[in-house]
Length: 387
Image (tube, rainbow, N blue to C red; front, top):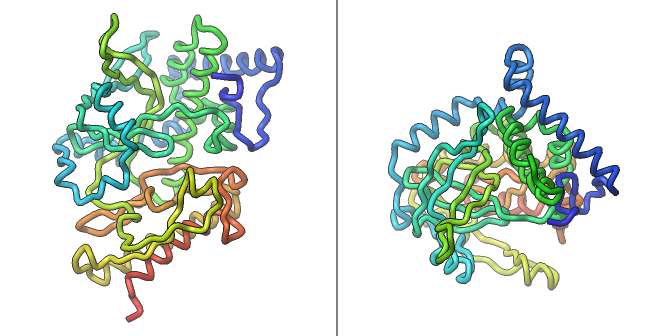
């Protein structure tokens, strides 16, 4: 990883990363001191531990609602893909990636921990050849044997637009976004490594804190619309064809979620035409203008439609306020929203926030979030509630 991939590189945001040997040395000394303070809090407990409970990391990590949802999900067998009323063709990767996942499958995943100055693995998650569901922009998604999915972060350059202002906040004050055990694991994984390896570890833990930060901001405003999610540093084991070790091992930020039966908002579209985009957009990120029809999924009571309409209105208001006051764009495109079936409820399962100036600009509006809002408005209009 080049220096631009380090924990303070904020894409094109203009966030200055340390320059030169002196800047790097000061940055690593500050990070080391923060990690040691976090480790000391974990060991001492008492008032310092109480302070950590007020951090974002602990407010999310100690969420009883998430733990209860996970406990229920672990007691239920995952439905097969054939049983899910979902068009997975919309989510599949290209054939080279699907072939790679078939030939070199991930066999199992662990959550990584660090206690009593010992690195250990817990929460065994087996993966089969059929577990690979697909990929998003930043993660690979696998179905677990119980009613949950695991999302494994992809390697992403530090210049990616996702690493904006919130990422830099995490890198500057990691003890607000990472648990004491994670801070201790961070320091442990950096011990005895070269500068390049330490920088890669820094980047992964700052990214873990950033993912948790994004989730927290959305959950605080829309707690009933977000999916229960747990963020952690994990280890995945991918099968090899040959070699001394049968598996390759990789440490990456991960998150797990309850598996819901439903459809992406995009799947309610009955027709779509390619949007008016430039050459780069048409080639690498083609967009479509959609027409929707909810009638394909049976009769739905008006009170249910009124409830989901209000939920969409709340999501729109939050997205608009976030863009206006904080200049952050909540990525609510049609593949990040799910409508559960048969109860027809709105759920948000992807929580990425981008700096406004780093997000792909709108060709129609003065702010990019309005493109997504327009699509949602079209979906609401398809309910035909005025008749």
